[in-house]
Length: 285
Ligand code: GRF
Image (cartoon, rainbow, N blue to C red; front, side, top):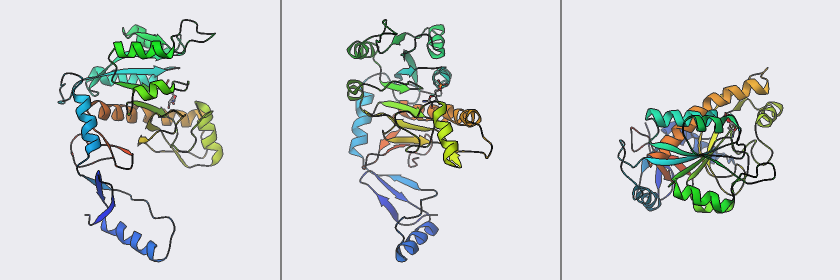
């Protein structure tokens, strides 16, 4: 049950349940500053020149796959164990993701993610070059390799270095990251690994969960694409919370990458990316 338009952009028109509209009208009358958040918003598709151009551009690059769009070529960036990388790789092999992992990029050549890539015949690129990792490549060399491999999308999965601006500019709207908190809370420089979960518990927050977001020039500030919520329990240790969040990470990252690889990301006029449902082309999350 829904009624009139609640929020619009030229791209999407979203409607909300009648009860919710009434609540908003009432709270507006008594002068609340903040409006109640929509519990469930259904969105209707309207002409979106930006999204159409993006999809058309992507469609030019290759063959159409089983879902009617070409299979995408993915580079995954990892610094650690790589459980998110493995989840994405398995989803690609199993057909849930319309793409293939064609490169693994790491600043830690001995990490679990790099080992998994080698064991599966995926080329490993070490980046960046540093004193401790002299075999690493420069930004220019990395860009050249990614171009040679015809990489469509870059997926950061526990990669701890800042992505150089040249890479961000070379892959507009094409780099995703997963972060283990509900951004914009508990993000930014210094918030990585167990530090995030310790900070969440110390804050007293009752909910946490992963965020998938597009990557810009800064840590954890790019546009949010998807989130999942998990409870923070009264006697949680950071490790217990991390395990609960990680379980959701694998699912939400695979869902977001599946949407990306099927050209199902739609950019609302205000710059927020939405995922179009696989089954109902008029629904977005
Ligand atoms: C995950 O918690 C992810 O959110 C963060 O780094 C961790 C990587 O875990 N960015 P894994 O290497 O994928 O197991």
